[in-house]
View 1 (cartoon, one colour):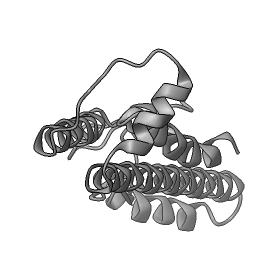
View 2 (cartoon, one colour):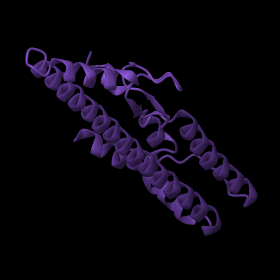
View 3 (cartoon, helix red, strand yellow):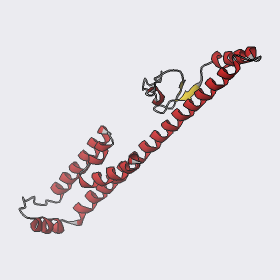
View 4 (tube, rainbow, N blue to C red):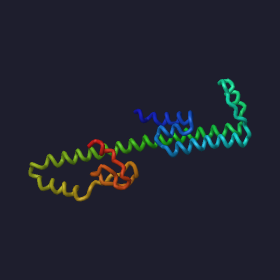
Amino acid sequence: MRDQFRPLLAALLALALPGLGHLTLRRWGRALLWHLTIVGGGVALFALYDVPVESTVSVAEAAETAAALPTDVTLPIAVLYALSAVDAYLVGRADVAEQQRADATAEAIRRRAASDDGEGAGDLGGANAPASAGAVAETAAGPAEVECPHCGKETDADLDFCHWCTEPLPWADGE
């Protein structure tokens, strides 16, 4: 449930300070890119329009200075802030969806392993022992393939890591 609020928190923090929302999502490159884009764009616009930069002492003076800025300077900066917040929100939503997909995949693999263990254990002592040995041989003939939640490629379900991207698989933590 807590992960559902991360995208919203990231968007709000991106509005407070450029790149801060992406830092909370641990997207270091995006955070640096948005920060440099917004700050660099602001500095360039201030220099282009010859806006005097004065140090203000009170909040009232800061509000007056902000109101006196030309729209050609404030509008692009506000648009960049909004785009940064939207990007942080969308990246956060994608991270939550990816985590849910990985959890669902891990749960499906756990259930399949539990059902395979239950079927093999019930048939070992009965008259169907040769049939169950054949069923185990069929499943053991080729390893079960699952999709890696990190890179999306098919990997062996028996491994604790993806042999393509070397990231640990979510079900490896439970063992």
